[in-house]
Length: 483
Image (cartoon, rainbow, N blue to C red):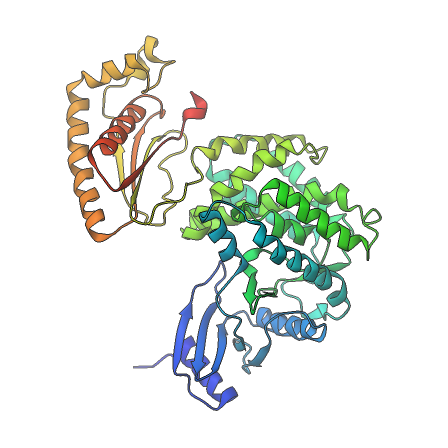
């Protein structure tokens, strides 16, 4: 039987080649949205990060950019050895603490804290050095996949948003021809921003390490020539970082003050293009979250959707919206409809089981996604129950109105349906609590998501709240915006 050498084994051999030692430990590290695999290899006091990536050009770009940044004395990891096939490399180990970790901890302790401001300002100081100083030293011929942030690249991202987010949500109505026309013109508009600078491409807190009390920068292999607006937007409008608007504007002002000492920001129309890049970034991340989260079922991306949607009202209220894209802005305004489908979750006590009870419409949104990543729980089909929606005097009411409640609770089929549902749900709640599970999803669906499913989910929510300790019950009605 043929033995296929694993990435860990290959990296072990590379570690031996570079250090002359066999690693004592090799630990697989968590991955982001890419196919790259990361490992920590250690021997005594030596610790290196090993990376396996089949995309050779991307590895070469990372090595080439790292070398250029280090010559400019920018704080990035050094690629100490790259294998002859350009599929593996070892880089310096910057530890495990990301700026994003500090941001999340601050939110858990009450909100975005001023102690983070210093790290953000330091990151913005370094960003200017990347954008301006390193720009002259970078061999852009090594960039992957393209040397410049082109109109085509922008348009491709916008199509990603259309196909992998908008088209996955039937609640969003649009004329495809008109939307395509606006997306095409919007790509042309963004590409017109002056772009003879280095664009990091993914400059956000997950790619900023805190090492020895300073900020260090990783995952820059997608860098290219591009406009200045893109990277500060990526950092300050990172949706899951949830930087309060007041702090965000102060940090943006700090960046512009430092930048204006070196660049005429009026000449590059910084303020004119800024809202367009905020909108572009929001559409980009929603497209990525739709593909990685809804299609590929990757938990981190699915859980990020509510935070991206929560930014939309703030953007619309800013008053500085891109002009001339009427149908596109109509679509953006409709994204508010999805906030019931993707609610921002409160912090969960460590000792409690979160139970999310939902009503939904089979005809409209369909079965809700499980944002906990468990891909489990229950879906109860209420369509076999008597339908109050067929009776004229109930049509404008919902399963929360007394008339509908009285109608349904007096029906034998409904009482039996709920009794059977409770028995099944109770068994899982007890089992989940015994096993220390943290999430359970319970969905009730009917044709329109207005009467039967709403009544049943309300009933089950009340029953759980009254009969089970150590749970955090949440209730969501996905079609409530349409009642």
